[in-house]
Length: 170
Image (cartoon, rainbow, N blue to C red):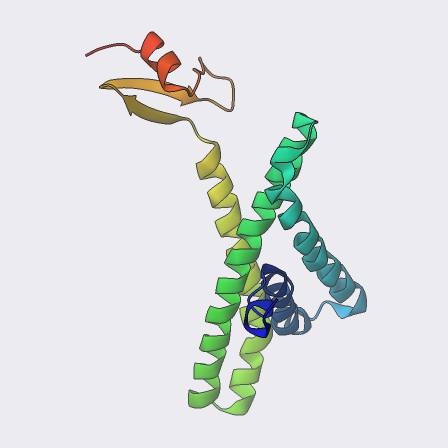
């Protein structure tokens, strides 16, 4: 593998992004040694479960594959949101260090780290709620409920022929 492609391998991204997040957020949160250890373990677990979720479709046990994919995709969304919020936090802190006194800028570090984690949790929960609500889809000018995760009503198949068979024309 050429040197150029070796540095573009996805494993480097998968390890460096959580490393950056841990380096920038964990010390600023003031969790102590046990909290930092748990944070590092959670970031490493995300590094393991995200690739597993991508390859879960090839598993024979469908229930286990669905659960691994579910956990991995939520971890992927959480980690990507946390990365973006960490970048925004760093840009905010850079602006604070350029415009405020050193004491005021340093006092924003812990507060901004907590807000970054809170905003990431909020956006992940909102994304989960939005993804789980029922959806309406138009197929051949018919409205059909194709997903009802709570079991309130009928769920139809997603293949186009089965949707046409149960469609109601206007």
